[in-house]
Image 1 (cartoon, rainbow over the protein chains, first blue to last red):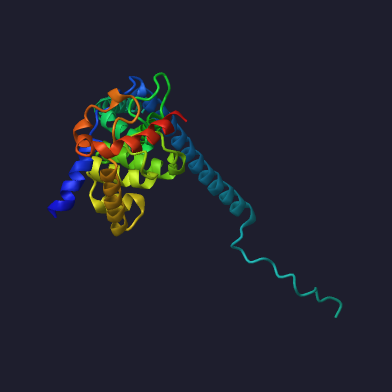
Image 2 (tube, each protein chain N blue to C red):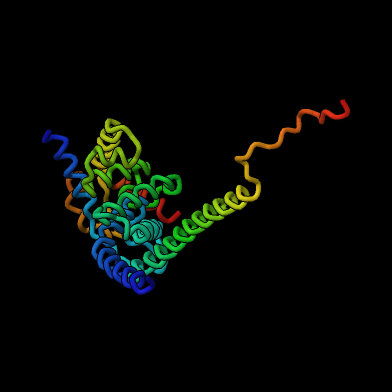
Length: 83
Length: 186
């Protein structure tokens, strides 16, 4: 196990180079973009809830007007008159 | 309600600023290795690594309140790896960095496994690859890197720390680095 480890250590040392200079405003820019992202997520979630609420209200109103649970009057048989 | 949200936002800002100040040096180094850019880069221009890191940090910020004890560094590294894997085709062209010789996938595996020390299983899960495949890619990349140890890629001042590693086989490195340096200017 030590043989591949030694090779890996060698490459690991190659990767260890000096850290590049971080631009001072990088964290601020990232936070600003993160805030925008968060706002957008919130807006999408709010829109979803609003849509769900609107659908529920629409269904309730429709059901209250139409009463879909009552059996419709039978009008398949023609009126039997003049017998 | 508004006050509580404002307090939470200011606390999030403070925590995130502290985290970013501590972590972005190492993360930017990892991102620079991934994109294959030379460490210095032209001044006054945002490098691809910086853009990658900014996006990853922004995603971490957006998730900050819902991290639930997860390490923000791990989270950002995962975002970085996912972003890079998603846009790997943009980074195919060698740009003269330390890992410019490797393919984007090999770079990603090498950086995750060796630079960041992510266990094989986690790296495989993050990349959506079988563990055997990650092991094979890592071994291949290690072999490639040892066959052609990097000399100074572009400006000679950029690689003082790598000089010790490169000096063992410095005789073979001259021809290979010339092509890397010319690729950087293209």
